[in-house]
Amino acid sequence: MSYTVYVSRAEGEVADRVIFMDAGQIVETGTPEHFFSNPSRERTKLFLSQIL
Image 1: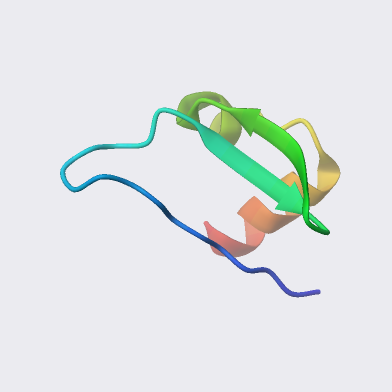
Image 2 (image 1 turned 45 degrees about the vertical axis):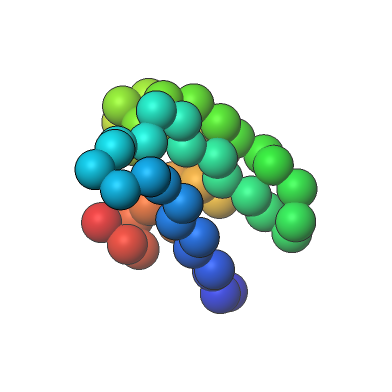
């Protein structure tokens, strides 16, 4: 399994929304707080467990 992570932000700002894509499709989106503390998809949970 492999992942590609893209980060886009304006200098000095923190993201107000996180999007998780799987196979080129958006599968999960939410605030950073929700995304990192309560992901809903198993693939998102697996990804987060490998990077955090």
